[in-house]
Image (cartoon, rainbow, N blue to C red):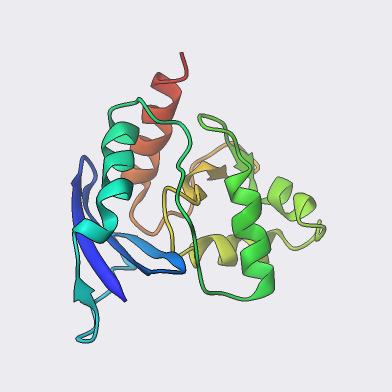
Length: 158
């Protein structure tokens, strides 16, 4: 597995993946910081295209990532992550709406758990999921990061 770190306005991001695709995008601040195993190899060049897309995203110039993804998880988790990718840039959905979209209308808590286990933050936009009451809830890297990402997108909708 290859990895690199990318400096962003929300702090360092850890990118990790291989020829199958990106497996992890970990925001280094927060509760879910991934430790880099000894057998991973640092390789900035492998991630140069993705890093360029992140520069454009944080500059408000990119609204959709073009990255091959290879997250590891259960079939239910993957269905939730695919549904997250359908949320348009600058918009939000509730956990309940995601549950309905994956065909499990009463599984909004399970959707929340799958959202929490999303290994590819930002690109699989778990930050776009909010509570039914419209409040920002549940973001492993902190609600300040979630709010930053939502405002970035909202401010660049034009």
